[in-house]
Amino acid sequence: MENIEIYSEYIKLDQLLKFAGIVESGSMAKAIILDEQVRVNGDVCTMRGKKIRPGDCVAVEAIGEWHVLASQ
View 1 (tube, one colour):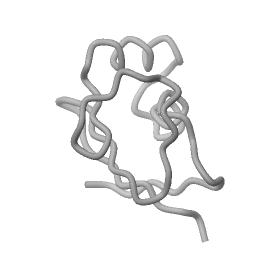
View 2 (tube, rainbow, N blue to C red):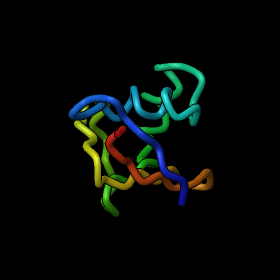
View 3 (tube, rainbow, N blue to C red):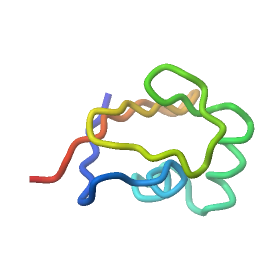
């Protein structure tokens, strides 16, 4: 599991996928989210705008898992 720091209270799921370099574009983020390849805290998430906060865990099928931390 890798850590990723965010600099705000939350980040939307699709933006996090781009910010972390998991996908190259918003359309790619949308596609994998709607294809149910993304889990947030262990549950499949199909909401692109889901607010991801420090302490959350995001996993992408066959790619990896990230723990979200607050930037210090």
